[in-house]
Length: 400
Image (cartoon, rainbow, N blue to C red; front, top):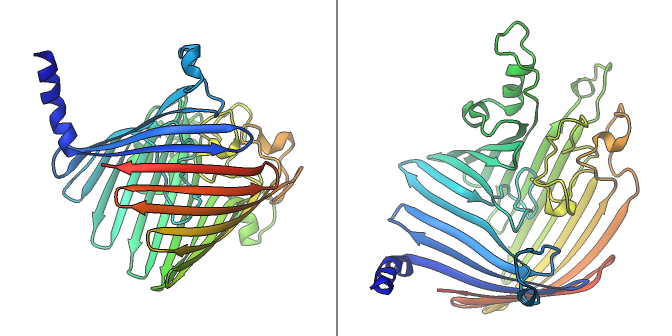
């Protein structure tokens, strides 16, 4: 009887669920693998439940509760997404465990899902009307750090223009001012900090606020896009008035793609000046990161290569009907990157810096083969990296 009840409960889920199963095998300085299940369950025509979970081995993550015999195959499990999404009239809502990205390019400046195996409690509210939409997103990063991202996008046909801002703040789970008040977050922050005589003044309401935006022009056979992020900028330098000059902390991204017949060409250049995304005081941990440990590329909230870096990606793809073949070249150079240590452990310089400290250069050439047969798909990637040598990745997917 209990088995029958369980089947009846699960039957609607099986009928209305969209499921994708993938297996990812890779080798670069060691063997790694992940197996992942992604599922979307439609609750009605407007609402659905989304979940993504997996297991893996070889990433330096080990669940201490897994028995030794099982660790030979599986070392950890992860759940990066589990959320409810839907719409009510012109509003779209999403709440639960989120793993989000925003931006027009291959890489993102403000928000990217670099954490990969881990999602964050949060919710987003999106309002659309005619040719524009606005979104406000909140994430709880850890016990002392929260994050808000907002954007307004105007779709003018061939041209799209977007404003973006973001803020990392401390010792508050949720600040409604950053979510609802329709002025830049850097101005919201100053409500508490710089209004002398105001009874609500609170200098401890310190935050790391950023602003910028992107523009994208589509011309039929392709598109060109540009994105900018400003962490801090010296107005005295901008206005040419001299006096106090602090370093400009900015990140820029320029890219595009062009299609002709079965061919696709693309390229993207991006970078960030030194000190961008860093904390500016040793005892105020509002650096623009998800985690305080691990590789920079795995813990940045936004631009994955972090401060003091430059990236160039060039690629070519050829569609062959049931598959596609591609080749990509990636050049990356970066200097000191210390998001938890202000000014790289030195005094604040009077001017903007870029690619300082001990520089590391990486060259990567990757060849990719992607195949798809209806609900079945997969890809094979082979690459050479000037620091890590040859790598291989094989991925299989099936949807039902």
